[in-house]
Length: 400
Image 1 (cartoon, one colour):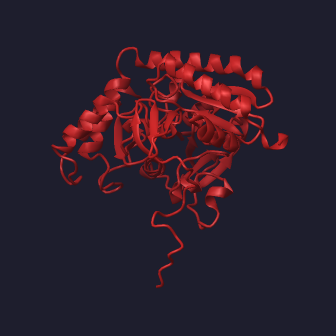
Image 2 (cartoon, helix red, strand yellow; image 1 turned 90 degrees about the vertical axis):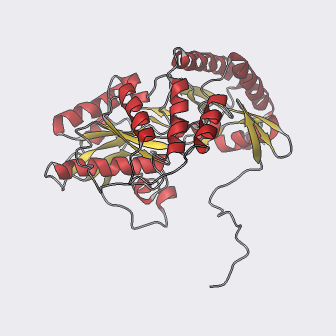
């Protein structure tokens, strides 16, 4: 096989920009040329405690010096302790630890299918999912979305998914048949454009699951772990899932994810049904415990709510000054989206390159605002100042 030197050593699957971070501190990133950025992207909702949080750094360093990895053939005192804390804080009875959100979703899919298999109904293997959803980039996760941009060139995909329109309860219910295992849904679509589920929609899916012995599987990889001001976004809706995939903020930047489930939903997940070489390793558990310590501190989630309200109010006050560019704000807590009247990706690049402000684009020409959860009022003020200046000088493509 000939060597093609035209391809970079680092496989070019990401549209990387010119920002090249080498250091982070709190809500700021620093590039290799010394430039400073206000980071209101937080690794796409990953750096829940910002960069270099002392308690997270110490926990990782101490554990690295003690024990980083052992096989899951052995007992896991670290995993057992962290799992119990998650069980105590949530609807779940059991936890499987992964290394990413996509892996957590894969485990959730397997758990849902295996539940019906264990109940003597292996034919009930279809999950109803929703348009504009994002569940990851593995083969199973891209099969769970109907977006061609993620599926093209990877066929044949995993069968067992049917697709409905997000927030259309009647349309989703109409797809239920003898092969349905349940629903896989984000309570707030992140990549889709910070689109919260309606109360009627999510509560209606829960009711349908209860009536038809189906499983409600929530993907809270982006919306969970304090991002909305609740520990998990489904708490905003007064419902609980049967299975839930989480990641991103759970490790505060350390690769970590988890699949949480009730005892009933996980009844089929017995010896040999699933596994992960690195999942639940002691180093990841130490990171997860440190993040949870901070998030569960008294007043932390209240602070997220307060900062979210301040940020949203400031944005809503600013929008009329730039109504040629900004349309509206949506979302919860510190998971906010600014709906634009033109290409959000181009505006995100403008904020980044000209104003040192890091944001993330999403579907429906939405700019995602996903700062660390421990920002202060000074960060909100700085963000509004930078965003306002960026909007003041920005020229949308149609106006050039």
